Length: 433
Image (tube, rainbow, N blue to C red; front, top):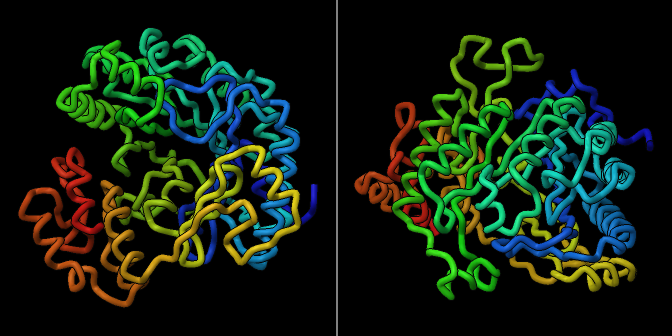
């Protein structure tokens, strides 16, 4: 391994705990790496992914290596504090290729010693040995796409695993030494009942993961599940029932000791015996975010810069939002050619747009409102933009307060959603769009 790869690529079990949210700044970057390979596409998914093309993984990793190298060089090898392998099914990569990618990141960027490195995995696609290999490669956070612990619901979603597979995968991960595990679950499914959702929540809590992401199903146009519902093969999801499921999740998670730090995300605080800074241990009250919050996703909600690599990846940096081409073959061909572009774009970029200062301010407001505890902090906004957000958005804020969607936190030091606002989030966000 290159000597310039930071300690984040060699984290041991005890080192994994020493992670501080404080290193996330607008002078560093998060990296999103899209791994589009799947064994089979799920019935509800509209993300860019390909099934039956695993033989192209070596060529894809070579192309990804070139994109990381070129963008890092164009940026002047800046700091990176989060890396996220998303997909698709990133766990279809072997540990050797994950290490190669992280080695390239370490050569092309300055990877922070406390960097959070996440890989998404589907239950049943990796065994204990494979999970140990990922940890040894430098990954320190594992996110399982469980979605449900009801086998009938899993079949409806087109998932290949069973509830038993999910339970066994988490047990294997613990045996492999993982101490930062996240579970994704979906509610509001066609025909799903409140009791079924409660059972999934309770069984998931028995696995004691450090983090949960709970998402309401969206029937994306063109997906097999959306077509089946339109044909009447399944009942359409009911919004009122989905709202009850969301409120149930809020109550169940809170009772189990998880903090809801974002509309769809819950996490535990780190144990008091962990090393590292803690305002709570200093007697200053609760920390801004729970210790096991997903730091990479916090970059999105705090409107901090991140770079997207791979076919179909998105990024936001240097005042520009951009997206890479959604084609495995075209992505590899573009990266094989020696065509360089101005940072943050690579030859794979298919679209981009500049953000105006007004757009950046508005995005900071509505993205920050997703942070259910912290909200949009007045001091942080002032430091970033040199103005009080209430002076710029007085009309919008007063409207949200009057409608019961928004509330002040801590003597008007921050603006956040009310519980009603969390159920009607889009109405609150539209105030700033």
